[in-house]
Length: 75
Image (cartoon, rainbow, N blue to C red; front, side):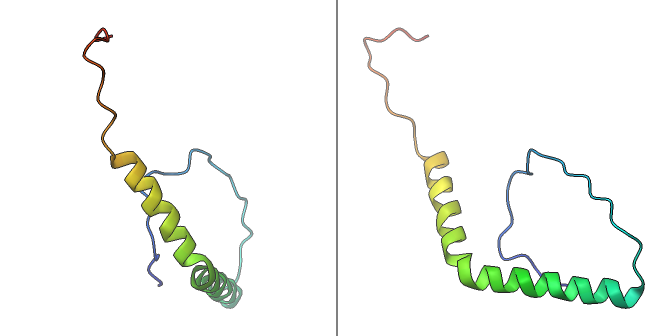
């Protein structure tokens, strides 16, 4: 089984129900291999951009908030 190149910290907010047909073992393995190959090729082509995006998101989320003006009320 392949290891994902990047794991997300939050689950997707949308749940999709897929009604998958019953497949024989050979068909299931063929589709699985196709999907893994597709993801590998997508990752090879766009992986750097995806990692860059998540790195930017992490930096934005971990930056300290701007200091408040001491004249401003606390709330």
